[in-house]
Image 1 (tube, helix red, strand yellow):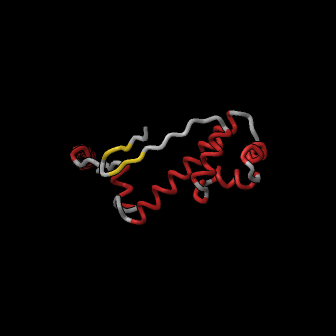
Image 2 (cartoon, helix red, strand yellow):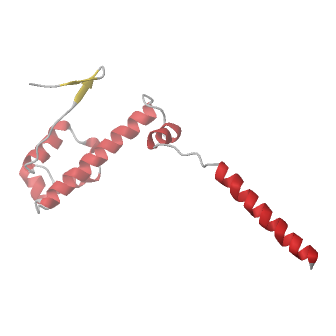
Image 3 (cartoon, rainbow, N blue to C red):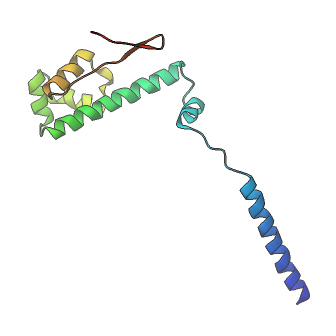
Length: 129
């Protein structure tokens, strides 16, 4: 009986010691930017540039789809407004990678959406007057 109590006491002490050690060891956290650097590549690498480009095009596609749905238009109706087939609107909405800027502007204009571009040269934004 005495040994059983000592064994329980030892286990409790070990458990408390482990709790203290775990509290002292904090899990390393990373920012999203750090994770991108580690798993996709650092800014300026071709892999990172390609990822950022595809992400932007995906966001543009989702914006087009949301704006079209907000205006209760079908893909076919939007296509007719700008003179393209329904399939091209579908491609735009799934990813605007193959679209020209002209096509994207036409789509947003048909959706009565305002489009703004921000151009940054040598760490300064360029404004067109």
